[in-house]
Length: 204
Length: 157
Image 1: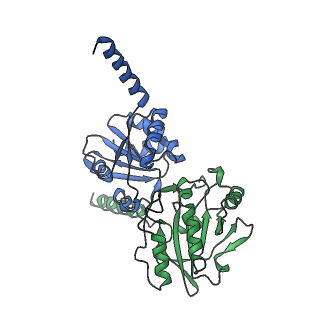
Image 2: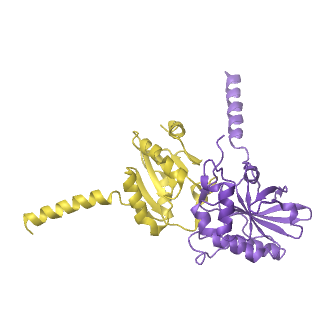
Image 3: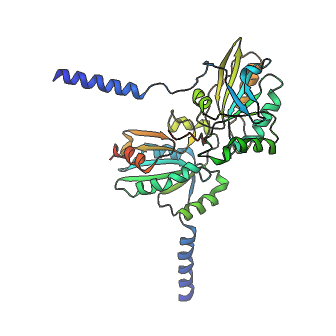
């Protein structure tokens, strides 16, 4: 009986810890490997191509999410403001076009063209980049900072605290974080959350 | 007021009731906090959704079925913007939703998402199942099939 109790306890412990295993994806301070994706201009783009960049504003984004659309001007604005300062925007579309027909590579090309995207808009065809990052929604931001040869995650989360109105947003998380990095400081707020569309994963 | 007027008024009330359908109350996060406590005898299922969210709209019927079960009470929390209230009410009427629908008007998402559940990324749909008196709960992010919702509910009934 005692043995059985012990067995039960150890089994439940195993089950308990198995259920709480760390979620996949990057956390603040984690090193990010270089990745290469196809851009809407037809070229393959790699993070290692950006020799002079100090880092990246990586944004999981798409053509179809209403919240991505609401942030579109702000995303373009971030690239306009920070690309020349060393933090270009890399927007990545990881949606499965089977589940989200408006998110095929061809749709991305015409969407970027009609909206006059100046920032890179990349197609994560096998969803591996979104999975490695642990991205869940759109728009979902990861700010990466180069430290020597390494790229390190310095911020994860929302663009600001008002999806509906850029004017009314009084906490501009991404701008504050990049500004801090440009001054050689650590961002004060490193993780935030926002309501967004789920990334449309391929059927398992 | 004569009989004719009264009966006209009655007919008007009847028509407007049918035409308006369920009224969707606009709430602040405090109301959600109360819901999460689940101070009731029923298992509470709180579903965060929006009219613009495809997977959310797809799974709504599964929750409507769950709401009919003995001891289960579903509340749909719409995250549409407050100025979209009319659109939400129209949608609720069109779909004939019987479960309670409320609209959460809290644009500063980061201030409350963790208070629902720290594992929630903020992507919708998202669902919280709470036992009576809030003794235990389960949080699920992502779309639920009828079977998945049933399976999750099984542990509470």
